[in-house]
Amino acid sequence: MSNFKNSMLLTLALVSAQGFFSVVIGSDLTIDALTFKADSGRVYLELHFDLPRSALTHAKSEGGWFGAANFEVLIERDSVALAQDEWRVEDVAATPEALASGQRIVDARIYQMLPGTYQILVSVTDSLSCTRTVRSKTVEVEPYPVGRFSFSDIQLAQHVVEGNIHPRFDRGGFSIIPNPRKLYAPPAPVNYYLEIYPTIGDTLPHDYRISPSILLNSTGILRTLPAIKRSGSGPIAVIDTFSIAGLPGDTYFFQLEITSENSSFTRNTKFYVFLPDSLIAVTPEENYDSLAIIEEFEQVGFLLTREQVAEANKMRIKGKAQFLKQLWRRYDDDPKTPEVPLRKVFRTRVKEADDRWTNSRSVGHETDRGRIYVIHGEPDDREIHTLDSHAKPYETWTYNSLQGGVLFAFVDRSALGEFTLVHSTFQGEVFNPGWYENYVVKSTVDTRK
Image (cartoon, rainbow, N blue to C red):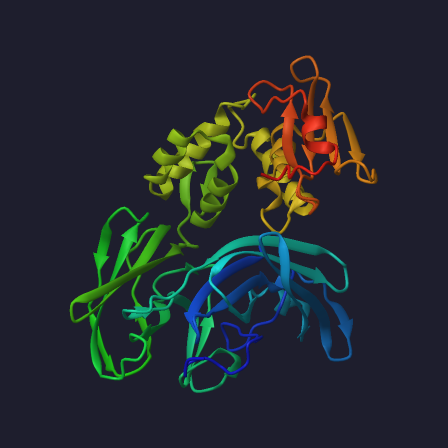
């Protein structure tokens, strides 16, 4: 393990804007994944979690207002469970008002992995209300090059504290508090951390030139930042900041190009600029903040054509807000009202789909059942078949009012709880009249391919 890593492979810490954070449960659980180089061809996968404190249920106790959250992480590869990790975080607030202060949890876990593609399923359960939030993330753990220098993923930080005040986040004499949401509000600068690794077996000192820049939507350099230099004969930790002053609310990429002698290496990471006191007015009746626009664009992706997605990705935040407004106005029965009723229904269904069908590979509304539910709502009839020893689990949904009556058939082809759409009589969806014989009846044929 590098000198900049804490010796523990599983770490947990609580930090806040005032110096320490508390934990929560909520619908906006954020997961971020970064990799750092380990020994013997292995890689450290570092998972960062973020949740709002205010969503955790608290009850009055002798020491204040008490709440707790139970975390669980399941790591899979090729649908095979490799590791399961569980822990509990407790939180005590002095007053109820402290729970509404905007504090958030920053939580971390570190795992030593071989290169490969992994599915990460994270669940957080409120120990008092038993409310459960589930999120999934596919992580590509790439090997670090052997015959050349390289550097780690770029960790964007919420705070950098000198000394070992928070030893779980210790990085060579500094405590780096991660920011999994990568959301920043000017004029505060953005802190970042990375590690540079020399070629294996090379013990000679080397000079490294680090050239940072800010890109808009990864399409081109928007702002070139001053270059910095580092020298050393072994792994080097880089801790620095960059300014986002003057940037409007939008999605950006922070890019680093590191050059040593005749070799260079480039990485970038996405971040968001949020202007809480300067919301974008789309109409006099409507205001949108940049984070809400980004989140909604991710949710409506399956409603758009590839051409629409490509065009929207070129837009700034204000253009995206206008695009969303025009998209929903097509379904507005009363243009005089500031809100489109169907838009509210869509948001509600997305949340419900996430709660019902999130699995180790996909967020609920991105699964086949979630997608159909978000678009068409609850079916008039839903048959669930899971106990037949001679057939794979499957569901059929019937909508009587769609195109004179339509059927959707979902099959758990891998027997892992992931139901895929294999047949539908709805125009434009997959049509396979032999779906039951092809996908449900068990045989020696592997139907997962």
